[in-house]
Every structure is written in structure tokens, then in C-alpha cells.
Amino acid sequence: MLTSASRLDSSWSLCLYLQFGASWTSYPGGPIRNYNQGKTLVHEFGHWAGLYHVFQGGCSGQGDYVDDTPPQSTATNGCPTNQDSCSGGGLYSVTNFMDYSYDRCMVKFSSGQIARMAAAMDAYRL
Image (cartoon, rainbow, N blue to C red; front, side, top):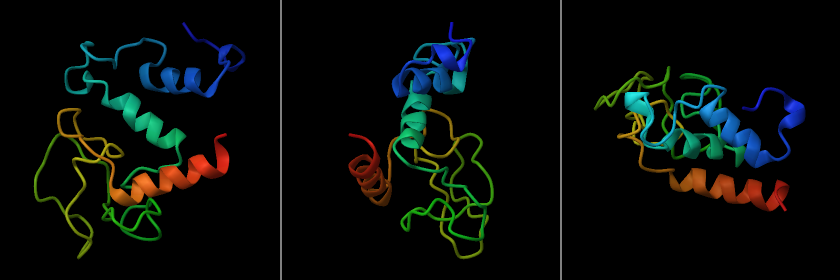
């Protein structure tokens, strides 16, 4: 078990720790019913590659700094449809890996998020 920062010898180890935590429960086939398809690791990879949550900053400000993800006031719970908490912002990205939807809902990064990750990888990850 990873118990201290000194034992994290690479970014990959940190990513695994962030996904699974000390109890190692959010993994494919794991005991957390709505988060047991491995999408949490994809979500954490998104952070590692320069992405913020799609609900970052709520309805105001720059949000997640990606133009093609609509603003949303809070994280998504479950797999709702037609959710829009920011007036005129557009429907929630419940299928986006950078929200907190259930694993079965998360299936994509937006084109803008893919471009942001590629730019971050070019700039910071050799």
C-alpha cells in the first residue's frame, strides 16, 4: 500500500494512488457499484494531462478552460439527462470523463479537451 509521498516514485504511481486510494476499491470489478469500470483512472489521467473538472468554477469565469465543454454549477451525480444549471450554458457533459457521472455514463473527452491534453503533453511531458 502507498502510504507516503516518498514511496511514490513516478507520476504513474501517483495516478494509481489517486485512482484507487489506500483502500484500492475503485477498480474494474471492484465493490463501488457505480464506479467499478475503471473510468476513475481515465478521469485521473485527464488531470495528469492538464484537464480540470467540467464543473470547475461553476457558472462563472473560465470554467475548465476548454471552449467546447458547457459550464455547469456542480458535479453530476448519476446519469441524468437534459441537465443545465447555468443559464444558456448548454446541457451538462454527463458523458465526459472529467465529470463525476457514474462510470457507465462516461465515454469521452471533448475535442477541445483532447487538444488541451496534447498541448500539455507537448509542453510539459517529455
